[in-house]
Length: 238
Image 1 (cartoon, rainbow, N blue to C red):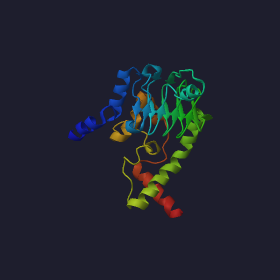
Image 2 (image 1 turned 120 degrees about the horizontal axis):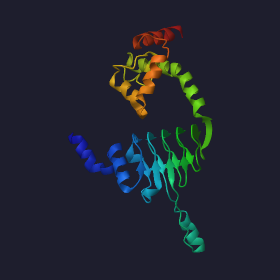
Image 3 (image 1 turned 90 degrees about the vertical axis):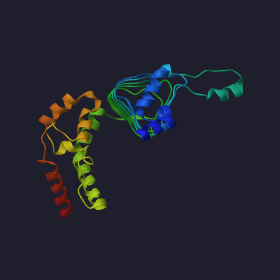
Image 4 (image 1 turned 45 degrees about the horizontal axis):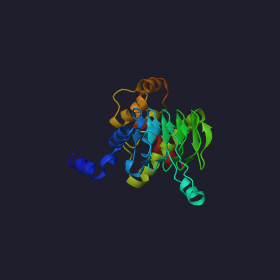
């Protein structure tokens, strides 16, 4: 409690996500529910024109993200030609958007719903719904449906690698928290989950949908221990 109070006094509106979102809303930004800024101290969200930023629900803003509603490049034109040419543009971010580390969203951009913006992207034009964009400048690299299938196909291998490398470093199996993003591989019951698994199930406010899908999907392992045994057998075979 004391550490939190000291942190709030020092970092003020950037002490944590809740404090930062509250500050931005107070300034005039329209921000939906369950939107999170994971590392506020590293994030720059333009407050020179806060009324020109609108975000939907379930926006995830990661380390180093910059969102701008204006430019000051016109100062060079002022120096060269003498006239003052203002620069501003509304930024709209839809629902269920992930903004990867060190990405920049420039003025005048609209990002649609259900969008993943890859790390280090420069978003200088509108992004449609249901896609993955990346690059400088950012371009659509695949549909969200294609990315969904890609991620489903990668789960098994990535979970096995997580366990294998953890064992190499720590000499033991990882705990349930380490495996909290992979538990669908060995769990088909959405009830009485460990806290971190429950957190992931409840993301985006659609737990009921996730629970329905979990009950319907087929698992290859009886439980987490069975999966660890599988990983051990894989290491032995290799």
